[in-house]
Length: 221
Figure 1: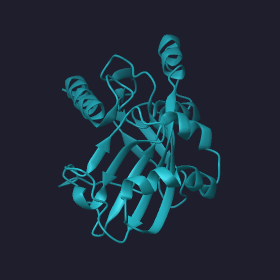
Figure 2: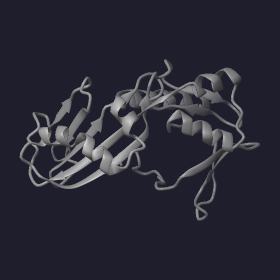
Figure 3: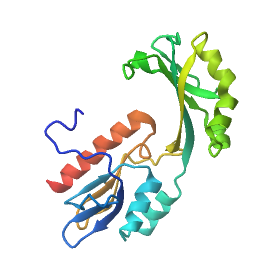
């Protein structure tokens, strides 16, 4: 919302291809109602496998060594569970648990304490190992497997609604060392960024975005 002030921002559209033209880039979309966009430059920040698919669909050819490095990147799968409760879960301040070595839940957050929910609700991130094991299982199987651990965390609160989400590309196993990578200069700069570059999680993604912006501004003058 902050970045969109004074700018036209489009959401809820799925890009299908990034295409190099004679003078500008073009981006096409799956929705028949959305015309293609043209641009002098592109910063692409989806997970790397999705970026590569967009480039392949648009017949964008990258240097062989760059393609090899990007293709080799792998991502963790993560299952997230959002439980709506009848009362506060009573998590310790500031309303979250970071437990990276826990075999079931590595992260737990009180959404009401975060200010993103007007009712008691908790988000649970299932560990990488267990997420990999349960990723293709149905929601009922996932919930049955983690139920006792979930209830141990929420205490006497009762679950009134629950949703299971699956993140195929939750985070890179090994981010690349660069904060961003410029993969093309014609028909204009094409820069890749995101949590796969220079460090994962929110901080890494933020710093990657800053680096991509700096590079683009330098290229465009």
